[in-house]
Amino acid sequence: MYSVIPYQAGYALQVSRLYHSAVQQIAECHYSAAQKQAWSAAPRSAYHWHKRLTRTAAWLMVDTEQYVGEHWLCVGFINVETHFHSRGYIDSLYVLPEYQGKGLAKTLYQTVERWALQTGVNRLSVDASRLSHALFTSQGFNLHHRRYQEKCGQVFQAFYLSKTLS
Image (tube, rainbow, N blue to C red; front, side, top):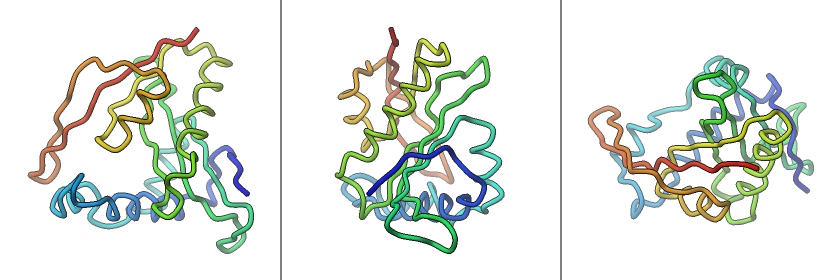
């Protein structure tokens, strides 16, 4: 059984490990080993993720049938910027590899869309990866242009997408 909950500090370490695992287990037909290493060479600190997620609106997908210590197992997360100049920008959306293909990313996205409508955010945007591009277009996002980013000597292509909410 899965539930979406608001981000809580006790999940920061799980989020760090989830992010790293999700990146490292991407098939090499999508991203090379060198690209995955540049993207996430090692899990970042729980402190990093706690600060990043508390500065945004963030939700976790938890498996309420599995525990890690005192917390449910975090199997996915999403966060969206809330500051004026970047309000509505989806910063991260990741799901543990063994939980992918179950509609969890779509459920996390729909949580953000409901939040946006309730808080008066009328536009969502994202720099989607090759893997997440299809999810966002299936939810009504439109492509504006491709972007390129360099990390540790590796070039990554992203798709800048947005959706106007009514």
